[in-house]
Length: 479
Image 1: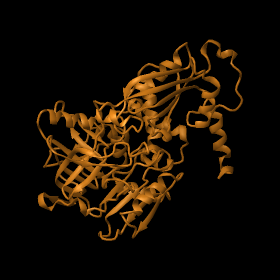
Image 2: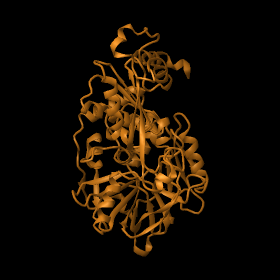
Image 3: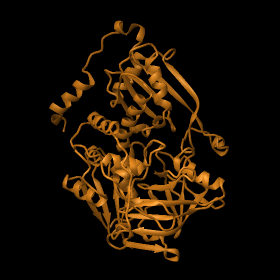
Image 4: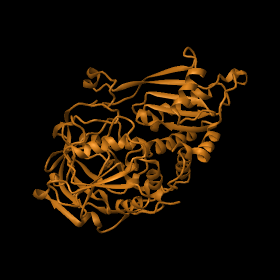
């Protein structure tokens, strides 16, 4: 099955036919949008919800919530069978990665995103019903289900990265980026040269392109090309006359402007993906928005962070797990059978890999690579390696392996001074103030001891494959 939609609107039509979309009208942006987002994020297989008719705003200025918060919609977004099972979806995505050939975007003169244009004094970010997502947020965040487009001033490579964007004034938007992220590296390069950094913020649009912007796409590959390869067709882009950046022709809303090295405004706090207000508020660079483009009846894609797991974790469980598998294979780790980046850890803090051990040290080798490859490195916490009879998606099964196959004296390792960040709630405030964002990693080998695994007590219960076969055949009894 292939991707069959060209933009968010076609995606909505298809999802509605799948029975996966509900509509809400006359709710408030001040409180109801945030309440709904939290409820949907913490509901199993909750629907996508399209909100409209906000008091004080024209009908048609809409917000889409929980777009990819259920496996059926995630599979559809990735061009897979909506009824595919959990591990089969990881495998299907991994196969797409294995054969991926990047498809660069094509430049067009114009597109639906240019149906409405605000420039200069006409720019007004308050035109959109931007929610205050969490009760103690420092402001209204237009950019949650969004991505920022930047260009490396040295190489010219374009990057699409998801970073929070706060409305600070009618023509000013704060954008916080954690150290080490591509957008931050680009911005720092411009600032080091004493130049303003051009930025385009895409607030709503193609859900696959948004997913690409929120993942660890290889550093030398543009997300347009990567997502174009996944869907098998190029994206159409318009060259923005203000910044020169390529913006999606079929996006819903795009802000464009410049961030200046000597200008900062107070930004935050914002409830983040760790489930905490971990980065508080402080002076951060912002974007002077020089133009806003939007379609008629624009849709804000809302993906506000919640206590894990929330919507973004639900699709990242599949995509980041597939990318972790790919990283392990490229590093030459043999017989890796499965990987799962658990949503409860934000798909970063608790990653599990299963291997069929072939030699002494095999499990620890896989664990260290999994903890430090790009997919697993940022604000990680626990990396666990288990045997291939363990279901990596089942936390109970994983912890059973830890309890019965791991000897703390010999099977645990700790990596110090690894890649942390300001959003890590465990880093001391004094260290954050000094921009010392180091963190450690716990490595757990929960495989049977290689030297005597043939003598290890035989476990009861089915293999993961047999367990999933049982669920497929008899799972209807559990509904």
